[in-house]
Length: 136
Ligand code: ADP
Ligand code: MG
Image 1 (cartoon, rainbow, N blue to C red):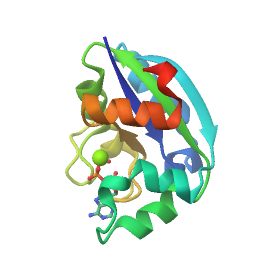
Image 2: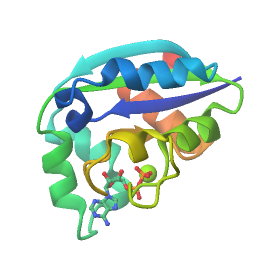
Image 3: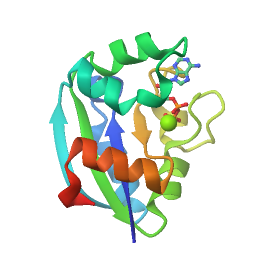
C-alpha cells in the first residue's frame, strides 16, 4: 500500500466538482484516509511548491493556489502515487489523456484542478507538511 498527497485546487472548488473528483479516485480503489478544506497562507504555498521557486510561473502559481479554499487529501491504495497521477492526467490539459481529470475539467496549465505527489519522497514530504508525520 502507498499513500499520496492530493490537492483539489481552488479552481475545482469554485467549479463545484470536489465530489466528482473524489469519486474518480474512489472508483479506482483509492481510499480517502484524511481530508480537509482550507484557504492556505502564502507560507504554506511556498513550502508546498518550493521546487518551483524561481521559475517564471511561480508567482502566479502561488497567487492561484492561495486564491480561495482548496481540499487536501491523503489517498491510499496499491501504486497510489502513479495511479493518482494517471487519473489526474498531464499538467497541461491540452496534453492530458481523454477521461482524465485535467482533460475533463481543467482550463489551463496553471488552473488544472489537482495536485498529486510525484514520488515516494515527495509524498512523505507533502503528507508531513499538510497533515503531520503521524499520517505517514
Ligand atoms: P504537476 O502539478 O503536474 O506535478 P508541476 O509540478 O510541473 O506539475 O507544476 C506544478 C504546478 O504549477 C502545475 O500543476 C500548474 O498548476 C503550475 N504550472 C506548471 N507549469 C506551468 C506553466 N508552464 N505555466 C503556468 N503554470 C504552470
Ligand atoms: Mg509537480
